[in-house]
Length: 365
Image (cartoon, rainbow, N blue to C red; front, side, top):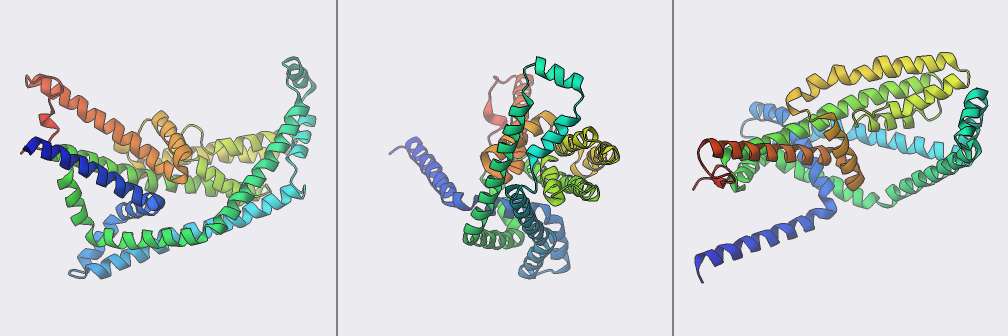
């Protein structure tokens, strides 16, 4: 058997084994993903612990895991528990008609000026049909929330297993992270320069997406939720979490929640509450992004807003909550890879090589 055939067979075997290993990890990919994310975000802290605890790598890794639990995991668990309780309460009120979105729409309809009603009738807008669809949508949404809550309870065992895998993997990523990073860099079939740029972009986008965008979303959600609570809106915690969730999307953001509520308050005669909500939404929530994003995210890692919007929505549609990290990450690596390819093409032309020459991309022998 000649050598080229042997190499082709080896590469085929390598591809098959890699795909099989990925398939093996697929049921717990979320645990692996968040272990990697936490290891990247808390890497500076872990290195500081390593410097203070030389030759005690296991102790430093264990302390880093404990810090992650205290600073990231426990607060999220408390928030999710409160959110589930709030969601169950809201669902129960919707079923008991204590919260009737159809009634709210009726009040809104009664407050609309006759001139606007006439214009809507001329345009073929039937407010009665809109009211029925709104009530039906509210009931379906409440049933969906109830079903999700039941699903969470049924999947408790799987969650515990995934949580344990994440912590176990996180410990070894802290302890052996540098050795694993060197092994990945050495194994990638790219030049040293291109490997460093792509892996650097990977780490930068993870830090920017999680550390920056999540902090901004939390701040906006807290401000919005507290404002809703102060002006007496039902389910303030639920709406606050929803605003934080939508704050991950540029251009759309928390305004999707607070703007319709403010409009309803103004139309139904609650002018002070409506003005307060608009002021907080525009002057406070709207400015948080501009004030916090530059120091937390950094201009060098910021993708265009339209790319972030499309990649985040697409990622979350395909992958759920994990998509808000994976979507922008794929988009950033896509742009970085094509930027490197364009640079390689331009360099090839300047050096007199044929376009598409791969000598700059592939590692040198």
